[in-house]
Image (cartoon, rainbow, N blue to C red):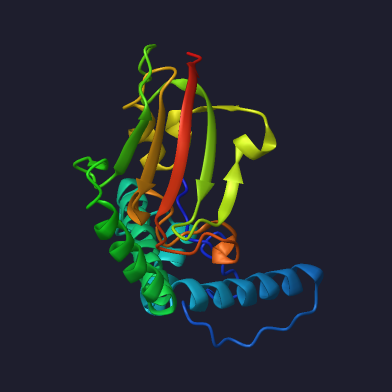
Amino acid sequence: MKKITLPALALLTLAACNNSGSADKKVELTTNIDSVSYAIGMNSATGLKENVPEINMDAYLNGFKHQADSGVTLMTTEDVDMVLQAYSMKRQMKQMEEQQKQQEAQYGSVKEEGIKFLEENKQNPDVKVTASGLQYIVLKEGKGKNPTAASVVKVHYHGTTPDGTVFDSSVERGEPIEFGLNQVIAGWTEGVQLMKEGAKYKFFIPQELAYGANAPQGGQGPIKPFMPLVFEVELIQVVK
């Protein structure tokens, strides 16, 4: 059986189920295995309360007993996989939504300022806007190859926040960098594909094409959650 478990469900509740299916039978911890079994039960209960607070304990104990005693169960192994996967995904989505709400409450002003920045920026006649909302200015056109989303490229870049604070710059380090376009933020993946070797563009990347709510360093650095980013990028070479 393929095991797909929630974090705490990997711990067997040996102390929770006795032969009668109840958990109130008095247990003496007289041997080492008695203590181990009871400890496993305690750890499992703690994990269950944290990870599945709404759990139906009667159903849980029955599932444990049916599998442990006879293997005759109310669900197939495929059902188990499907149910646990669906529950885990639902829980993860809920946690992400809650995190998003918390981030928006704390950094809502950053999001609003970013929207205002991009709205004003696209009034510049030199600024072009793609269907995704990516904005860019062509500083110099190139004559070489165009990369694809799967390409490895060699570039020089200079990254700043909307107010001009530098957060990363290969130009300042004096050394270009190589990376796969499928390994970077969406704004880079899209933007660099617009370029030919030898070109230099300036990109204004909306937060949803950058880091969104998940800013590097938890937002403790220059890049805050929901902040648009500005990059000057020179495409030196499409390596492969």
